Image (cartoon, rainbow, N blue to C red; front, side, top):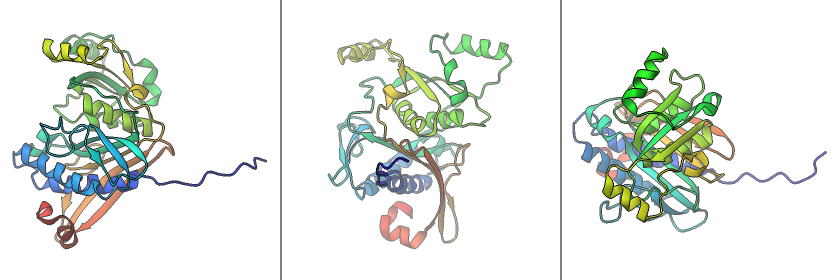
Length: 305
């Protein structure tokens, strides 16, 4: 009989992070279908940043809203939390799918992920990457040495497979592709590198695989990436994108989607649905929450009016 002591449970930061994505989603949802994506994104950023101040951690934003001179809050390199342990890297997308939210389309999310300090991939100046993601069952089939979209679309259809095109919403699509029993088997295409890192964090928790390769948009971005030490031929797998062993992830729906319901307002407040995960335990929680409007207003002011 093993007499070694059982490790004591420690804090699950994902259960604290879900408050940040819930309030970002509620704030952004005020702008759903109103055609103002900048206002929706700004509301989500403001609400998430407010709630992050309540989380006990010493965090550094690795994947954020841009460089310091481009973003007033949640910019790359910003220190987040109260400065107490643990030391973590942070990836955020307070409103993934700004266009989806603005147009009232499905699958916009508020998303955040944490991992141990120094374990998140920094894409440098490269905004886009080619990526593929799938479930555990099909992970051994992933291969980035494929033709570009137009030829690949023909080959996929000739093989008898169906394609669902997505205009935006890479994280939601990746989650759908890696979920066992989903009607989607594979995510493939060129999308944002921040979303690639966030997707990798979720996949570390839920299982499956993602591979990617940086995709500079033009010669200037290519040269900037090379000058910054990026290897543009490297195939980035899940562990390269997020190397940590203790990864936390939270996503809350803003508009209804395949993975979670969006924010729904009631006479007394709002309801939200979130996916909350931790890689170390492998636990995936689906949290349905009811939010009281007067109490939300006292906490967040005009952000929820």
